[in-house]
Length: 162
Image 1 (tube, one colour):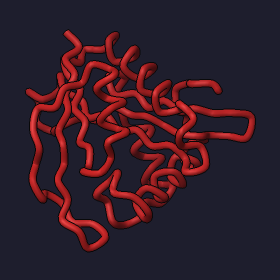
Image 2 (tube, rainbow, N blue to C red; image 1 turned 90 degrees about the vertical axis):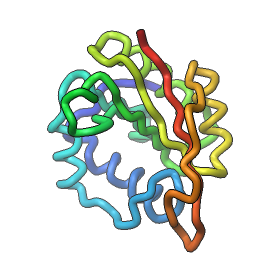
Image 3 (cartoon, one colour; image 1 turned 135 degrees about the vertical axis):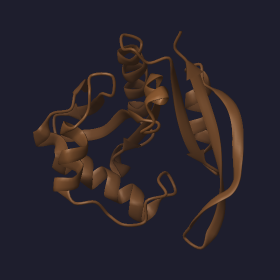
Image 4 (cartoon, rainbow, N blue to C red; image 1 turned 135 degrees about the horizontal axis):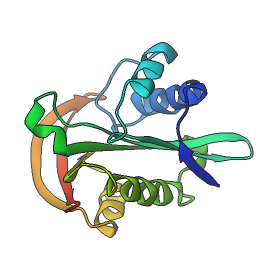
C-alpha cells in the first residue's frame, strides 16, 4: 500500500468511496450523493494546510483522508476537521490507521493548531482509532442528526497539534 497526496485524476475514486458512505453508512450526514465535478472542485480548491491523502494498492485507490476548514470564519483557520473514508472492500485492513498517521504527520507541518473529528454513534472503531492517535473526546452532541430514520448522537474529538 502506498500513501500519497491526492491529485485531480483521483476525484472519481474519491467520489465513489464517499458516495458509498453517503448511501450506506452514518459516517457522513450527507444524504445526497456527490458528482465527480463537485469532488474535483473540493479536491483542487484547498490550501496546503488542508491536504487530501489517498491510499492505493496495485488495483487503485482504497481510501482517503482529508483536513478541511472547520469554519469559514477567519479566527478558525487554525482548526481543521478530519475526514477518513475507506473503500468498503478494503475496510479492516489497517488502511485507516495508516492514512490517519500520515495525515497527522502532514498536519504537524502546517499552521494548524488543532484537529477536530465528528464521529457518529455506533462507530466505536473510529473512536478507538482516534484515541490511539492522541484525540480526546471533548463533547457529545445528542441526537444532532437523523439518518436512515434514526436520531444519532455525534461525538466530537479533538487533537491539539501544538
